[in-house]
Length: 594
Image (cartoon, rainbow, N blue to C red):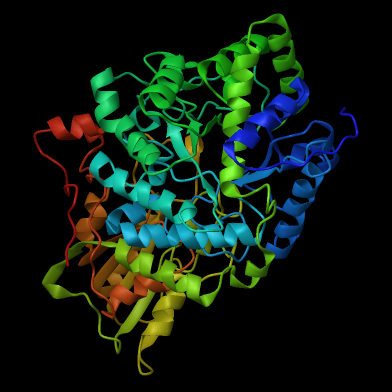
């Protein structure tokens, strides 16, 4: 596609400008294109001068290992260096709670759990570890953090938000960005999803009959994810825009645009919010990136969609399956004058400046010497700290907790010995799964490793024990099956019948009962709460279940505080309804026993 010429590329702003002047239209549009690794061979990175490749959720090599990840990503990065101008590739992945696609990586609590810690330094450290594990596999671009401010816990992305409160989200989002970016080598953070995805209204999600049935195309299960925020601009700015302004001020160089909309207009088409507010008013100098297939939602006519999105201010376009169609369409739009060369040049300058800032022209790969640190004991210790600081004690009758390490304990529930359930969605695959999907310590294993030599720990997932006598202490671990995005939109929020049954059996067979809830959001727990002597919200703690045992047995105190108000009835959603409800919340924002 390009002439076989050589060019020495420098990295300062003036050299970036010189580079832009050397580029053909095809090379510029290639830089604006981001394809998914399963849809593009490395040789096409060279042919089309592709600017970015990503691994979607589950976009893993086989077999899935850190070493195979590093080799896979390097192959794409090497292909970019074979282009005429040798512009380096930037490889992206959704490392939203650790490098969570990689088997054996350290998996941290999801953001809802980190929000319960209120600990910005801890969040910064989790992000730095994530950066090192990403760089070990040559990934330089992390689609995190979500600085969403969720207002409706029925949303399937609720656990991606630190809190319902902007005042909690903002400093933690900034800390995460700093952890990725403020030390060399850097990983590019992506503050997402711009803007007000957490303010969407239930029932406003749309389906698009002109879109192919590809992964993440919204389906019938979607009720609020990718929906519309029917709020005024004052509310938009006060609740949802504030974290982005803080992110930009803290040095954010990438913003991902939301699949949701505001007042009936999709964000991918929103020139006012992208160009006027983000780039103009906030002074954002980095580049924006679309979300998965996001521009395809704008119009049945793909040319119209592309023109609208680029003119709105989107710089890099995530087109996972059809990068060739996108390139041809944007070329047509420029040649017809519907998109100006000036708009293309602005997008390319932004992308190249960020690549230069990351140091990719000098060091186009990550650092494979870090491979031995992926999932290391040192990294897992920080994750364990995050777990014990995130769990929230909601009930503790008669000071039952902490437990003595000599206790005779019965453990039950489908979450007790289930790494996949305690990690939740976005773990190894997009939706996550049950069982031993990666390395780590289950809550049951953590209990067994913590109790004294004379203690007895018996386990049955169903809570059906052969002993006739009643046990002194029962621990049951229940909660949500893994989910992600609109697949987790849930208007019910009740515990499953299976979980309710095991709680009932354990209540009948134990003198004292502790319920541990694994969930990505508050659930309706009134009955379970009444049946328990102690109740713990453990969120989605990730790979280090030992952190739960640390607080159960008193090696560390409970310090977590609720990042979301806890409902007592389903008519208390969304948050505006809860605030107006005469009965008030079951537990308020910030609640947590010590």
